Length: 202
Image (cartoon, rainbow, N blue to C red; front, side):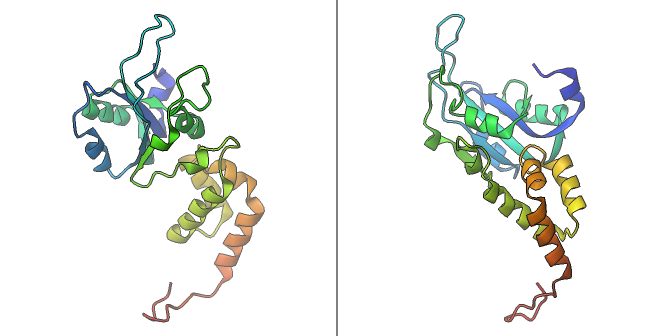
């Protein structure tokens, strides 16, 4: 159950359980058409109810990583579209991704992680390893955002990471202060680059 605090706040990452018997046939298309980044587990068809020792109904686990933070009410709209149970806030993106095949739950059936499917550019490979987040992969995303946003101050980058990308970017931004400060400083003082083919400033 989602508690009242989580219902009153907004988060980027939410998860759902999708049941084949109740989801619309085109549920993947419906999610793809939102443009939001999302990921689905292999079909969980071998889970056992620990209380009854009976097989659970087949289902998929999905995670949507929204471009902007969403309220519980907004996430619930996805539930209604997919005929799914209520959404759950994702507290740890790494843990949630690894749960898609029960990576850290050896007592549960182990699914094939190669059957995890990412949609709309959801980058998840940095969450697959035992050692955790691949810092280089996160830094590539951060650098791309700096280029696209024109960010030139470390403070603005930190503020963005705290408010919008806390689950995945913030640990890397916090631990790579020297590198990122150097990059931002160099960017700030570098001369504009001219595209030799178009003559436009890059």
